[in-house]
Length: 168
Image (cartoon, rainbow, N blue to C red):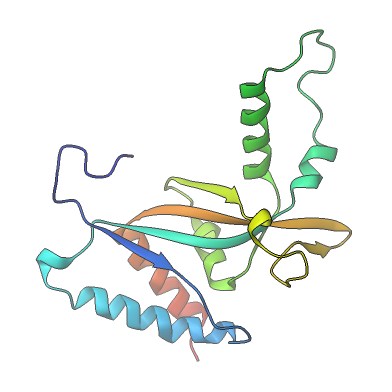
């Protein structure tokens, strides 16, 4: 999906869901309700067509590396660099994921019928920080950012689900 192709007037909203440290997840319901109301109150010419949302996730990359059989077993040829990268991306997408903000998990519970990609941020976080890697059940979950491109309808449906799930 390309934004703005064929139309110069395509508008994209940008959502970074950052809660202050130690704020409970229950604050998400009123916050997303307010966000949806603000959007619905915008004049038609100021409304977005898409929302670019950046989510904080942790992905268990070691599980995939150790549990997945190599597609190269029984073959004499080695995988090229591009094939190894493609395989690593596929493994990362299929890995177990922990969402740092519980409300963001709702976006992927029903449908992920929207484009997204993720990238590692482990090198950008101090090793002593609680936001670095997380160990759970003997597995290491490393920090990533997941960038999602939502239509306005998908975003409003997501916001509505968050409001229902986290009402105070």
